Structure formats: structure tokens, C-alpha cells
Image (cartoon, rainbow, N blue to C red):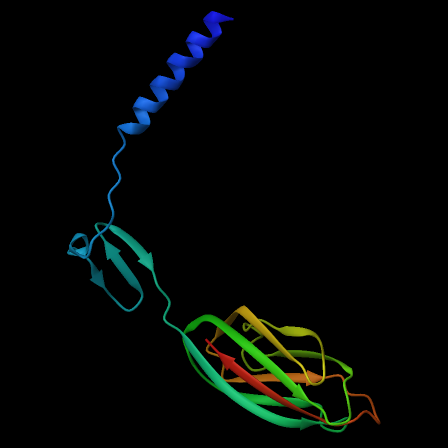
Amino acid sequence: MKLKKRIFSMLLATVMCMTMGVSVSAATPESFENETVSETAVSLDGYEIMTIDSSISGYGQKTISSSSNGIIVQCTSSGAGGMGITIKTSCSAGTRKVDFIGGDPYNNLTTKITDGSMTTNDEVKYSNMWQNNCTTYLIAFDCPEGSPDFLVQVWIYG
């Protein structure tokens, strides 16, 4: 038993000595002197990191009914990258569940599709979505004949 303890102690001491010998330093602005920037990549000391510049914004509102159950949001965007969507509904006739689906119908659906359920007089947010030069985003609601109209507002950002 004493032999096992001695071996374990020696092993532990060796590992501790090895880890104490490792040096760690923080990067300072001066350490980035060799940095070169281009539109698509950052090169630092021989390593290249790809960057994607993108932005998207759009807003739309519409009264949804059984005869007009979709909203088209015109977007201003550039590049490919992340996006988020907020959908807010208001209904004076009370609260009910509505299903919806959305996407970019003109961009080969490279923009991630939004689908889900929500209640009227509520708000849902989607983040960590993908867009690729999205100019139009369409959201269609399941609105059966005879159901009350409701206002929908959509914000697209990223």
C-alpha cells in the first residue's frame, strides 16, 4: 500500500511540475502588428480566419384574415450570415392559437424557414437563423374561414 502511495505521489508531483512550467500570456494590441485585413479573410502570423460580413433588416405589418393570410416583409440585406425574427400579434376578439410558416421564397430557400405556433396577443422571437442576401421574407398563417382578423407585426434583424 505504501508503494502505491509513493508512486502516486511521485506521479502527481511530476504532473504538477510540468503544468507549472507552461507559460500563458494574454494578447495585447501590439501583438497584432502583423495583421492584414481583406474583405473575406483576416491573416495573422500565417493563419487565415474567414470572416463573413452580413446585415439584414426589415419590418412589416398587416391585418391577417382568412382571405389574406400572409405577410410579405421587404428586407435590406447584404452578405450571408445570422438573422433573427420577432413576430407580434394583436387581436381585439380575444386570444386563440395560430400556426405559421415563413421563408424566403425567391432565394431557393437558402434562408432558414420559420415555422411554429403562437397565440394572438403574443410575441415570439427566433434567433440564430441563417440568411443569404434575403430581400423578401414571406410568413403565412393558418387562418380558417370565420376566424377573427388579427394584426401581425414582423421585425427582421441581424
